[in-house]
Amino acid sequence: MKLNTKLKKLKSSNKLKNYAIKYILDDYKTDDEIKCFFSNLLNYGCQSGMISTLIYYNDTKKFYIKFLDEIHELIEELEDELGESIKVKGNRSNFYSWLAFEETARNLSNEIGLDF
Image 1 (cartoon, helix red, strand yellow):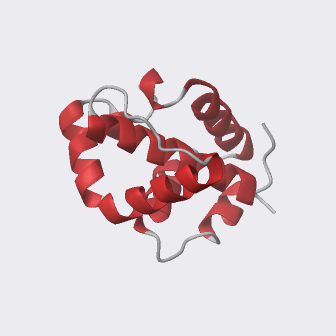
Image 2 (tube, rainbow, N blue to C red):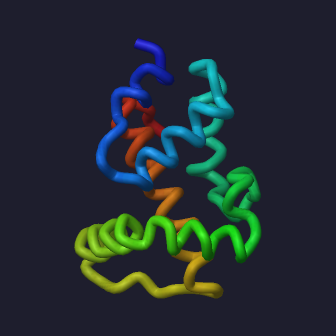
């Protein structure tokens, strides 16, 4: 099954997850493009500037506000897995927005069977 088909099937009630899926499917069409996207994001992160909607502080603040509930739920899950609090580095909304998008993408890559 093609990766874009697998991603479409993962849509859920989670707005953040759906946003990430839409972002990927809007810009990356082939299996190779999707694999390259995940590889680059998981290696270099949002700080690389590759997520065009999460470059500027005003954009990450809007993202943070829009997905506040999903972001904090994700942070709680990560803190439970780590057994400690996540320490914010730099701008809070920027840090949490990048972390949430990257973690959501990591989870999506696992769900569609990519192994990096």
